[in-house]
Image (tube, rainbow, N blue to C red; front, top):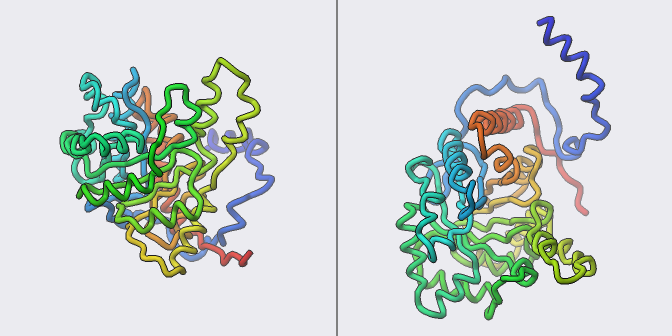
Length: 335
């Protein structure tokens, strides 16, 4: 106890809160609940059961550290009941030597959902040449529960090796959902989607839409900074184009009040979610069944000592339990 009190004194001046953003959204009610000690309430997703409303999505594949990262992430997802999306599996369509980077079903187990991942540009080409069934074979061989299709027009446009879309992505997706029975997730890669794109997607029979909202890793900016042939400064404003996770939740909620027929089952709120209470708030605010993603938080601890990744997940679980016990969403004024 003496050592703990000494630490309190040393850290007191470093632990001052100048402005608490979460306080705008929650009432703190310390009198109404004990500390929760029971198991979390299970969540159904893609026919599987999750224990936390957290999605660990689309990190990496085909690099030297990919196997270690994916195995550690699969292990923590199995232990804490979280869903997982693999990084782009495109390389497996070309070179099976990287198979071990993605083969994590035995690690993650069969209880929680695991999704493979491919880009919309590859899907467009495979539909055009009639080889799209190879994607179903890929899902089957990985023993995955479905397929993520990532949509990234700005990244591809600024990438020196980028692919060119010949069709609008919504047309490609509409054709694919008519052909396949595998569960699908559609995601952006870091700039989110506006209301018209969300409206079009919500009318497709998708397992989920993943936001990939503005505020997280920005692949448009990343690709611009890879350029060496010209000054990229005049084009970097493209990296600021997009929509935040909070904006996109509001768009989805507005769609529920419209007359469109919504066929999508779930929302995955990701992109710039670095604070657990922000993810918790958005899941509670969204009127569709929702999970949230904290990709960078998990990736930071996914290499090296598994104990650090486990400690992060344990703190995340504890934080969600505390939020359930002591926080109540405030009524937000109409804007």
